[in-house]
Length: 267
Image (cartoon, rainbow, N blue to C red):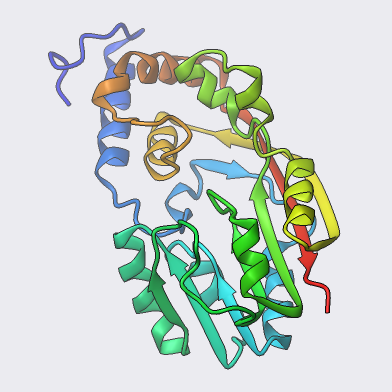
């Protein structure tokens, strides 16, 4: 990115140089998979108190057949100390399918390329455990169908208006219906309507900080639904404004919403 390509106001040449260096670096790095370690030292996200990965691993250790929906690059599933004898993961994005396959096949898990649309490509009552971390969509009737009687769905999900401080910095104020989307009580109602019994539902609002503009670029490239169609060139003025804000005021702070839901199929 050259100065002539981005004629934007900066308080000093050094500030412009930092902006261009940070943005170029973050725009070039791979965003495949669901590993956010590139952000170490550049952004922080407070974790929910319930410890999803640990709790999921405990349930996997007691299951016979498990399905991980929207596994990403398979990183969370692969971290479990023990996988069930039958373990299947689905993923829609081709780069993540390849990444998850390479990571999970040596552990005995099968990765299925699935377009994240109903129906799920499995038979009725195929799994006694279905898990999903941060699913984009949740097809509750299909989850109920593939669960065996007595089986469990266990998921950590993104709650309403999560990181909307950042979303609205780029897109402006969002309508009320966008701010209340992903309400945990809507998930409870949908699970119940699908015939499942919700046995646990917890929600927390957590603190997220971005320490430099590169972290913001990387996050928006990776979590593509936050600012749909995000590109560096298409959002240069707002990126420059946020860079100046971080330099003058310190880390950009946003609130992250998470909820945990556990539902069981009667039987």
